[in-house]
Length: 271
Figure 1 (cartoon, rainbow, N blue to C red):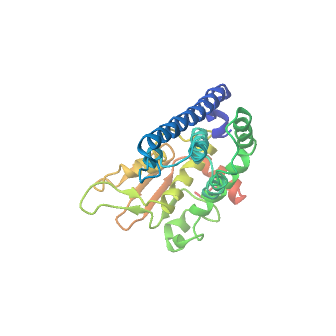
Figure 2 (figure 1 turned 135 degrees about the horizontal axis):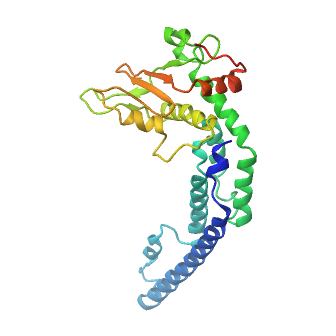
């Protein structure tokens, strides 16, 4: 079971979304027609060829034609649709980059129609197991000792004898405020790595990542005061250190075993 099985947009919403998009495009056409007529009227009265320019009318939308505006509207509508599918909560970092890149060129993305929305949703649901597998592989590579700069930490080797164990140290992923305040996960790459770890445990547990600004693990770390330095979520206990390290302990050995089976191709969990 994956997040897509329970968290997808109901198809009954598609007609509402498509109707709103179509209506908005018509209103934009009407608005620009009014802008154009107003510009012609002013130029006729004030003499458009005598130094009087009323192009400022078009600056209301930073464009001089409705076609450009509708292209931007189309791209924004697709972004909103993808956000409602919450693909960020079940895709790996690499899959997200590839997927969003396919929507960068507004001239190549499909029009907003019910059929197009259903096709995207169905395609994501059909390939959800593949996305989940790649997310597991990605999280496994982040967590396994020897796969990165974490190789030198004895804790990683002590708790991982050939497979992912019950604890791991992640280096250089935590920022701290030396004069007080909270710890926080480093932005960008480090944040994506912690989110990937959190996502895979939710997916392995058959749940979608709950609502939050980023993910429960990231959000909890970001709300942990420097004076306390530790906390926990449904799946993890953690300690933050001033040397930028995050000590992570897994609360669900059954999910660790699943991750080892999927990504490590082994069933034994280190004790």
